[in-house]
Amino acid sequence: MGAESKVFSHSEVSAHNTPEDCWVIINAKVYNVTSYLNDHPGGDDVLLTAAGKDASEEFEDVGHGSAARLMLDEFYVGEVDPSIKPTVEATTVLEFLGPTRDVKDKSSRVSTNKLLYFVFALAIIAMGVAFVSST
Image: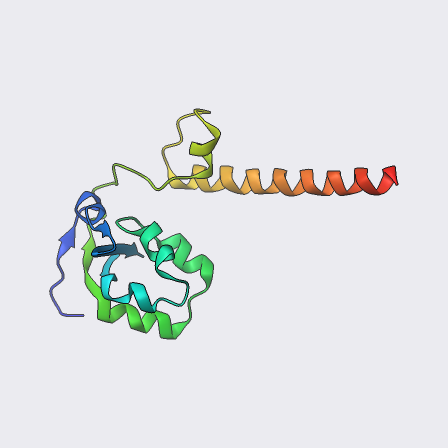
């Protein structure tokens, strides 16, 4: 990475969302991963789903090691302006559930998603207990 870094808004990055022009944001840094689509071990769909968006959480959740983090340097194009919030968020579980409430900040969305996963797991356990007790 050079000493000077170009700064992009979220909307500028979001325009790069095709297989011919695929950028992602990871930890406030912008990467042009277009040339890596065919080589990504998880397949190009993983990157295309994140194209033009902040993929920090997904990148961290997968547990990329130091080799993957070093590879990012070759795709680096700049930074995201932290003072400008994104206008369109990535699709979340809440959007599929319909208009429940207006969730603006990411921490509330993450907490709600964790709660939904917990409730879903409890429902599966309850179904298993019901099945065992009925036999």
